[in-house]
Length: 248
Ligand code: 8X3
Image 1: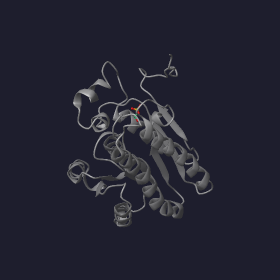
Image 2: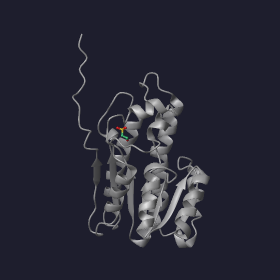
Image 3: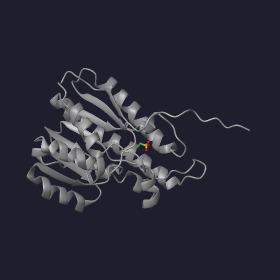
Image 4: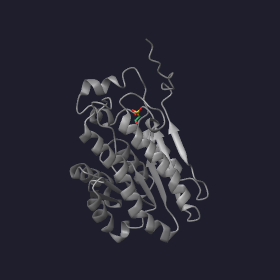
């Protein structure tokens, strides 16, 4: 099995790359930080291919994915993991650069990698697109604006891919985690403010990157006739809240 994981430099992507490698898969790990990918290559050996590019930049994605060496070119599983949140400001004050960057990584990067790898999967009559969504794509919260909307896109794009790919043998899954710790997610969202980032997880036992990797590996290893459409995950300490009402 050959697995391509975007955003393999940290967090979910790193754990997913390691999980598949431990199971004997050939793994292509992508990311913007070449040194992190080189460290992973040292750890995982010749069955790992580091591929440094920014998924949100179409020309970079096109170049990188068209130059895969033959021993890694038959990608069976694409894990569209790259992405994340930037800022938690209300829509009226949010930074448009943050919005652009979130749209580029969470939406553009995901559709570029999918579109570029689909023809080969169709030709080989096998393939699995696993997209990292989020509970933020279903449940709105203040400041979630573009991040949540981007993850709603991931969910519906996954559904629509299923519709397009009917009869091809290809599978599509949306893995949508909730509160997850031990990753760079909150440090990135709060731009390095460690105090704010730590407060998100205070007094909780969040999901871990390994929990997500476990779910991704599970959906990819079901028998070929089984398509897991959606995996929505939360830590046990997280649940739904009431709708907000403004009084007075
Ligand atoms: C991460 C989950 O609730 O922090 O996608 O947006 S949340």
